[in-house]
Image 1 (spheres, protein in one colour):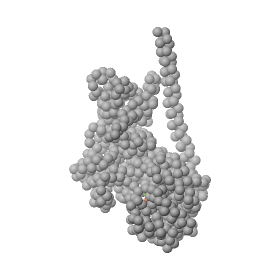
Image 2 (cartoon, rainbow, N blue to C red):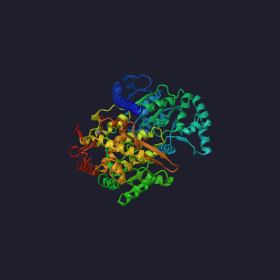
Image 3 (cartoon, protein in one colour):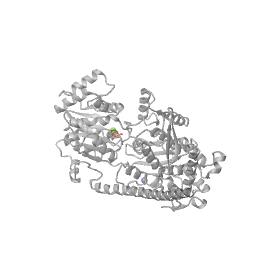
Image 4 (tube, protein in one colour):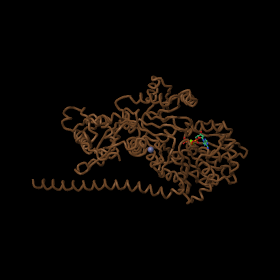
Length: 628
Ligand SMILES: Nc1ncnc2c1ncn2[C@H]1C[C@H](O)[C@@H](COP(=O)(O)OP(=O)(O)OP(=O)(O)O)O1
Ligand SMILES: [Mg+2]
Ligand SMILES: [Zn+2]
């Protein structure tokens, strides 16, 4: 007996020590987060003098970089003339001239510029102004075709080689590569061609030796990195280009790459010292907003259709959805409500897809209800709204998708409908992707966030130094200011942990829906007696579970069958901390509606008052801070 007691005592003591260690870990993690953010800020300040231009390779002073904004180079007159005569543009957009001059000077360059800002011109214009041809590596044949069509329309000779090129066409292109009289200025290829076609590489070698390979452009360069979204294994082999043709300047272009992605690209492409030019991610004309979506109803469709009819009457836009099926159903629902909408997804036949695209581009269709297949290469200037019926799978994706709005620099809106169940629908899709889950959670954090400017969340995500006045009330958070409260959710967390633990002890796994319903008292009567249920509204319950997921008190668990992936909730790494009486958890919740139109959010407020999110009415939720 005695020995059992001793063992128990020792166990208690070890458990107590473990708790202390876990607390220390939590503290250290917090400290790490704050130091990392401080580090980013300081690095930002160091780079600030270069005016959002961050040379990551050879040290280039601000003065030296300024030099590339000038127009007294030997090629400057030709540039100006071709900009006007060939491209029919009157002036450069920010960073274009600098990028072009650097590339014309033979420098290797990474150009990070938001979607739709005009990256293509930065290699198309130098191609037209240089001898020989520019090799352009592009991830999608459709992108290639768009560019060829555009170049043809302005009389710039360009050719392509891809898997669907005919033998005769390939033979002609390969022959012309070394022909000094060959007229083409740009050769578009897929990374697969570079990786697989020895013949192409040997012709490039010949062209290089003959001085005809003037430049290499790698479009969507983030595809090289396994940390970038849209990772493509064949991009990994592109290092061969710089190894074989070291004297040819390389230009990598992307709309979405963090500094770690760029470092990875630099290594993969074997570019020793590229200069990195980063244009600001701040699209000042875009208004960012998040609306809550009730998992229980299809009200979001009514909301979206009212919004389009009232706010965007006769204006062009995109509604992004999660799946092909959603594209069909949401489009049909909007049509039923009298809107001129059409679906677009990868499973449609090519003619239908291009017909939808064409009709939308010429304003014969007002709204395209699309999956992400309606993506790269969509270049319509007057898109006034991009509505996400379902959240994107990452901030990078969101930035790119929403960035299709307002390319004409006039005001446009980017609105996300954020629904609890959607998190898990996407989760099962990204679970096999490298860091897919982590990226999804950053998107969820963007949506759940009520106290940080949405632009700042995007900017910080892309490692951009952010000044708060940069928003100008062009996001819902800034517009609605201090309209949130910080609530203590420690007891809620304990209740939820108890539910998950109890299921575990019964050898059961609970889906997020089951956890929600069990906590709301909808489980079996026997089970209800063993747990603490809640009177909070469904939206509040979902917000709390989401917050606990983001904070690491709950986490995701998957089980795979040959047919589907199931998603469950399990205890997160921080759950044991709840055993400590002094440990507390808070979350921020919006107090009133986002705006008059946001019915769902106002419900949180009214229900919250009745059911206990507001401190005054609830014994378990304590208002910590108000109006920060
Ligand atoms: N200097 C300029 N003045 C006016 N329009 C311009 C200028 N440069 C480019 N554009 C137009 C041409 C295109 O219609 C549009 C988008 O250009 P594009 O090169 O396709 O964008 P991008 O490559 O940066 O975007 P994405 O990331 O979506 O590929 O901008
Ligand atoms: Mg582009
Ligand atoms: Zn803001």
